[in-house]
Image 1 (spheres, rainbow, N blue to C red):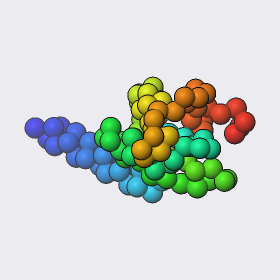
Image 2: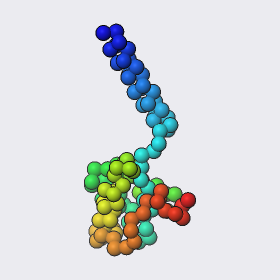
Image 3: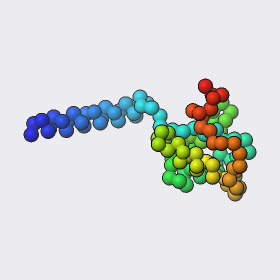
Image 4: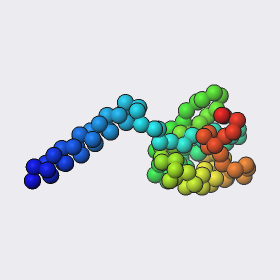
Length: 111
């Protein structure tokens, strides 16, 4: 019985340590960053992403309007790519017909 208490206590301490580390920025950020192309409304992209239940914001970075999507990039990259592929050009526009959707971490020019 004492061993069980020790294991539960250890698990709780490890969980608290992980939560503190993540809240202090020690963990890897779980996000995908999409540079909104010229001619597409960033608000339309943001609305399309949020409509699918993902948390997202708009950030201005180096002259780009980026939609920053909070998600697990490893597991949700293709889902988000599909959402962006079907996002309208404007809040009243049609889907974007253009080059493949590329995230900031995939852009060879950004490295």
